[in-house]
Length: 216
Image (cartoon, rainbow, N blue to C red; front, side, top):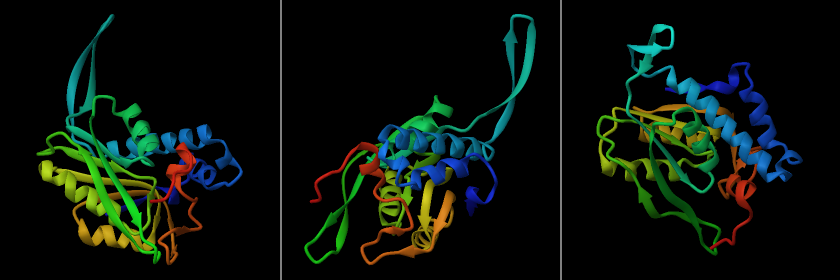
């Protein structure tokens, strides 16, 4: 199931527009903060799908009744571009457990690339609600590989994928591989270049957040 949040009028659309804007992108701190705010928006929307139970809270004046979530949340992200969105979600779900995956494109001289993974840190996922965030879903290969590796650590009860901008091709690929997952996205772009970059997209979210890297 796909939740295209950008179709709904909300402040999320402002943050999506700003991370695309080539002038605003020159301010790396603002770019990171916008990704963080996008993560906060996604966390709020995803929380509506949780299971809730009634609990009592003692106040200085008496007792209040609230409905609070019971899910055990594991927030995951793909290093390094996903860190700001991950932090935004963690701002909202501050008692969540956390998982991190290092997945990247290994480029070859002919222009092709492979997805490489060098590091994973993950708690037990059995019965958990897994939420994995990455700003861009291009081919979907990094996301699919990351989820497969994470699931070596247990079987989550629910899987949520959160991405600011997805290509149509990447979205359809992830839906085929993980039909049980719920995908949350800000916007969908139709074009994916021969080098697997999203158009109009926004560029390299990792570089825009933390500075350019040397291609290997």
